Image 1 (cartoon, rainbow, N blue to C red):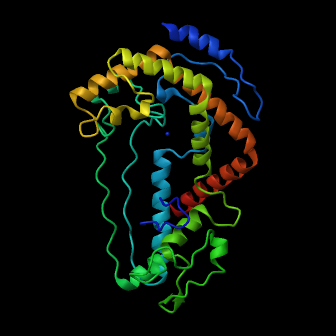
Image 2: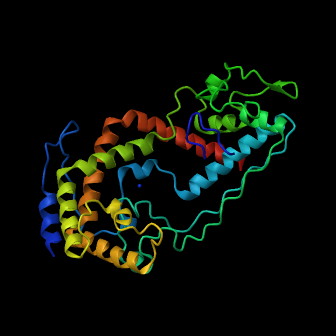
Image 3: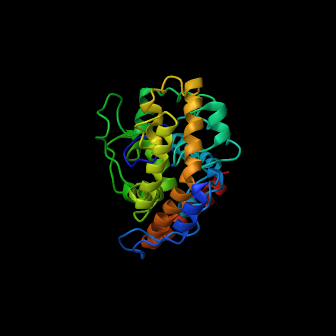
Length: 318
């Protein structure tokens, strides 16, 4: 799926007392500045059980795959108008159960740490994505809205399908105007940006990222991270301030699932559980997401409405 407006589609023991105290801890509150109040702080929750407000605006892997196939179908229909048969790259089947937040706060699953260390690919079993079909020069023009060898990003394009109707690509094929940005962009626009008021596909993701960035600066998370870092130092891993830096700091990039990585991962997760890092950080993250959902309620309502319209379009093309 192409989520860019210009990129051509090729086709996130002491812990019990700490949690209790934090559950009743209030920042300056409100939807303005300051640290938000927290709801209940769970003790060492499984990341798969975490439920965050932005999850309601996030496609599942099965939905992403389905939308990718719909986008490919729209591209294929566009190419057919110019006499080209184009099937694109067929997306893999959706995996089983998902854990959207498995690495949101760094590695957190004790069983996975003991079995695989930091090797995120272990057990994935996903086949390599096949290469996109080769295109003739004439098909390339129709697909991309520019001639082979042209400097990328300079061809006429549009942010929405509504606006594209007013943009001249300057190219023709089979006696017809080539759409702005080619069939690749047309397929994307028809699905994700049909009108000028279409909410950017990355809007919800952007809010989730903003909430995460804010949560990392929150005093309650900073305190928990400090305790986690001290625990890691006591376990023999001094100088690591963030769970995101463990692999790099310890030089585990070449063997993330090796014995050294497994030992470090077990200590990492044990320290997270000792200070209830996932429980505290999860509660803080949720509070910031709730604030942003409230601040952007109108846009998110439109986003949800347009998302449902995409699903209806997908059903009509099935």
